[in-house]
Length: 545
Image (tube, rainbow, N blue to C red):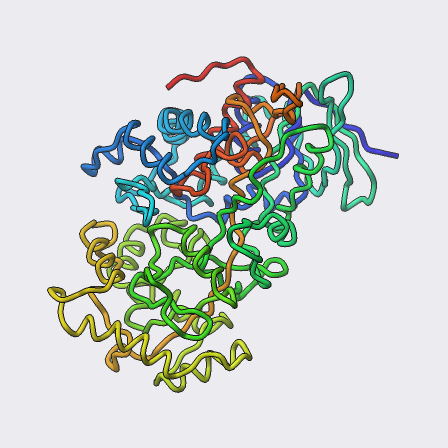
């Protein structure tokens, strides 16, 4: 016998986008059923673990920092970086809407909830072959994604309309109920009780995330220009980001698009304390480390350096015969520059301890470095190049790293540094010099530190694998987050009545608001914006720039 639920609106997924949708609907007095496959303890999904960067344009924080930004400049940067496919309709429309709306309807909305941002804005995705962010736009949540979810959870559980909210966890949605031309609810399985459930409503909002937790689905939708996918891809997304509701939506004629457009990361390592199988961490690679291929050869012709074009890093590594890489550095570089993305490994920001955070920036996060050296199996430490090569080969079991290749790669780079800045003719050193001109990077970037420097020993090598992270494609939606049908033979495309998709499930808007690349900080902000627009469409609320 199936358990039955009834509400005005069902929200499938209690991550960031689902929580924001539910909160906005409660504000309008709607009866909401919020369903999630995970436990109540893990409410918030991947956002709990996020570092918490958000993309805003011409914000008060930017103006106070002397950063001159504008909608026009952001539009230029976005479309340059996105390289939208010809014929792509909804992605560009969503990009324009996002750029106009992100500051008034995400930044200001969050500040009204009491959420704030660190005053120094990060400058990421500056662009390599395509121009990226012309100015810093990555606003760091003070308290990380952990604080964001804490505030939203508190708002939901203490809401004046709390009696109109029903929370159901450990419920896996498998099908969307559809009859007489509209969606009428959801069906699925109560995993703890081992029995089915049915839920009916006037509207359903899909907030179930992307496909990054389904490595086989990632591989099946791999970018064709990149050849075959890596054999070994770590899961840096969510264990339940399986694409179940993408499949269920497709069954009722929803248009699923751009699944090959994936925002994977190049510097993934195994989590020392994994929460699920194949759990990986996303490193923030050190700018002063050398990025080498599986043989220990420096990758080029353009050296791999973080902070400019994440897509290029992944693409270049996947051009190699074996699609993994190494970063080689020393302890001096690691103490100054090493970081891991996310709230878990940034407790000073997560717990809003300003002095500790400033100390980590100025003097390096030594505790984090030492912890990873002690616990992560993808780090090796040595006191000579010969020992380093031996340990790298022992880790992979291939014997493909040659001491001669290491010595040549490191020696040529160190020789450039030895000549002095006036004679630097290396693109990585140029980018380090450029990064250090911005105050947000200067304190976190070494000033031309050699690798094979006895005073900076020991040497460190990090075994990096491709890490799944975000889906840039998904369920196609219009500008109100209403799910769109597959086009008919004449190209006509209607909406599926009563069905909405938000956050990563919708490719953060329209099934592909980013095109090929994200300017970063657009994921959490995209979850909030799409959720607010969906709730607004359900309650007939209008938004304007």
